[in-house]
Length: 282
Image (cartoon, rainbow, N blue to C red; front, side, top):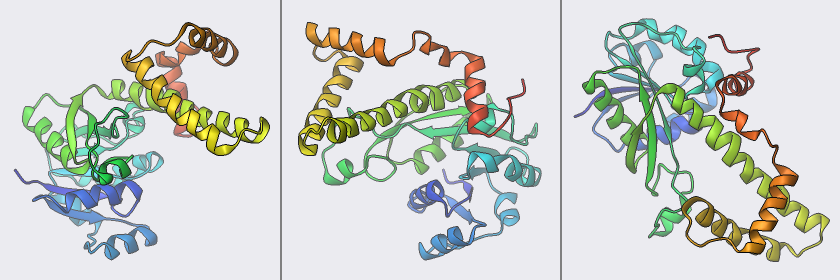
């Protein structure tokens, strides 16, 4: 079924990705963008801009592709203008979990975030290999949360999520809090941090230890795949010598109490920093 969708922030980085995919659907889509650069990008892409008030008034679902720090004032402006039963879909859980969004009893709040193509995805084309972020050619999963028990509203959200993040394999349903525990704690605080740490280690090997760059990159890229395959899927057990080296690395790099990041109070502390808040009210 087709729906009326308003994309707010249609000319931003994520808004452009979302809009590029929605163009390929049968949905009626209105594009909203305030920044001059974003407006230029939207028009250059051949899309017509609509005033925010006109775009959201009859929308079945409003996709807020705007930065977390802007979601408070944006929802304060737009939510009062929505029709009863409309859905507000944000693309990150931080502001929703922190209670920064303006809400209404007759407007449904939802959040969805892409998983991005898995490192274990069986890619078959050059386009899939080139699409490391997802939303273009490489299939990915998505995570969604909705504050409603209405199966029809959940269906609308899932159809929208599958459209904006296409091609999508599965949509996994969680609570808004669980989505916040996944993003940022699991994937940004841990996985993205480790990715950045790998790059710092590579830089040390090249510029401090003097290893030729091609050799350092080759061995790190290959062993990163082995480490992920073995560590996450148990594909091929690490050798005894590797286990000893891993223990040394854990003792030298990882704090003993690192798992505290999964506590609620640490999640609040992390999100408060991300949202530039003194603290999160509960």
